[in-house]
Length: 315
Image 1 (spheres, rainbow, N blue to C red):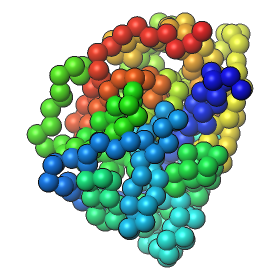
Image 2: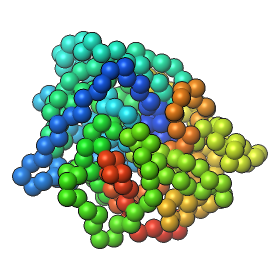
Image 3: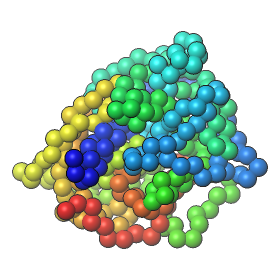
Image 4: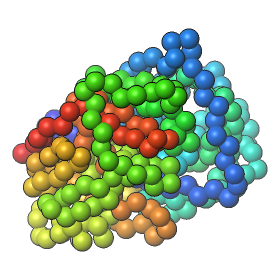
């Protein structure tokens, strides 16, 4: 398998993950209590799965080592049912909820309250949904049975150094962007960050999604409106979604802009329309920030990246 083919396949697998998460809760969901060590940060932490563009990290969950996906596209943090059973955490709290994924299927779940440590960051009383994460939690996916979602990321600042495949978490109070970081205009969509991008001159509103690997992933309806289904070649593939796998396609666009960065020959993932109110039409993934620094402040809201450039990501 050529390296380029491998990257495409990994992108399709990881790219559907964060886009797959749209959780609708039926009760108030308590925010976690975040605390930092003496140095005031989590410290720099390497990606647990460095071959993947999406950020994963080793954490301690109730004292047990677990791999977690840090996912700014997930409304809530989620623990895999098999992980909860393995750690003997019981059946969870009697708080019913419904989860929807890109595949359109619904899954009933409950909640658990967990203590999580990510380097020097402590999350005491983190309430998570208990769901079947399917391939995502296995080695055919990211091997990540825990998702750190917007409930955590709205309480801290997340800094990603994608070139060195590492991350750190910082307190929001008193944080300011460092030298070399430029802002991208964003607005809050719920607790997510949303920005306006252009695809071959068409305007698209997209959620910034660290759980997605493609530069851009769009619904079929959005792709049609942007003129991307105009007979150009499509590459078939698959994406991991809530509890399973669905089909996806990839098309190549001539130009795409995110902030002040121009991407040429970028690969855009196209997934089927999702019949869930409020589900995003488009997702900006981690390939858009390859070899750059990226800082997300969901509580701000704020998005900062290292200086833009013209980027060719295809052939």
